[in-house]
Image 1 (cartoon, chains in turn blue, red):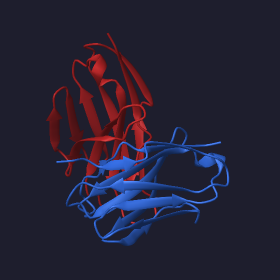
Image 2: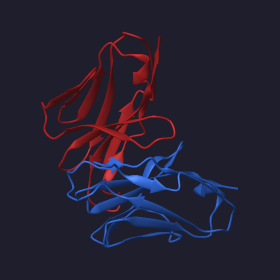
Image 3: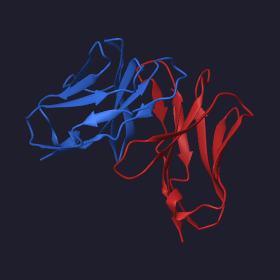
Image 4: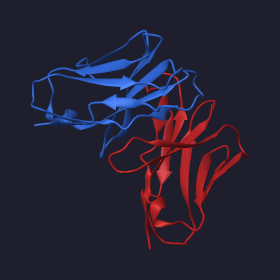
Length: 113
Length: 111
């Protein structure tokens, strides 16, 4: 069974630009969650999508947004990039119930210059 | 507020020197506890799920246990390839997200 895939793996952007990251979940999984990981803050929850609907959202500014398609693939977008947005962005998929394990992709390393 | 705390932050072991990592939690209505392993620059790799106090799970040199307040990840006779950051997480409801992670324990095993 194929795992969670994320593209691109690496991105370099400059302040003020916008970026779109993509995630393909494990086949059959309907929930996709996004996390930001930095050395200082650890893993922080961004948002979760389930059956094309945002089910939960973390404490991030509105510059961070996402969506999910009918095939469960998900994208997240960050507009007006800031230096502090440099991080590893992780996508995780699960069947969608609260006690289900989440399986992570390899992440997208975003560097903002 | 629901919280997960891991200790120690870093642990250095010699190959073959067994030890334990701790994950303590304060969650209203625990619905499971997950352990992950993360190598540098990669996504977390799922290891175990524990659902109730007294439960134990094993995989190779790793054994995870759960009490009502904390979980332990025991590493028996570790090898250098066990070097990684070990994360624990608990599922929650609300704006904190659907999964709260501890900051992790960075394990280094020297040959």
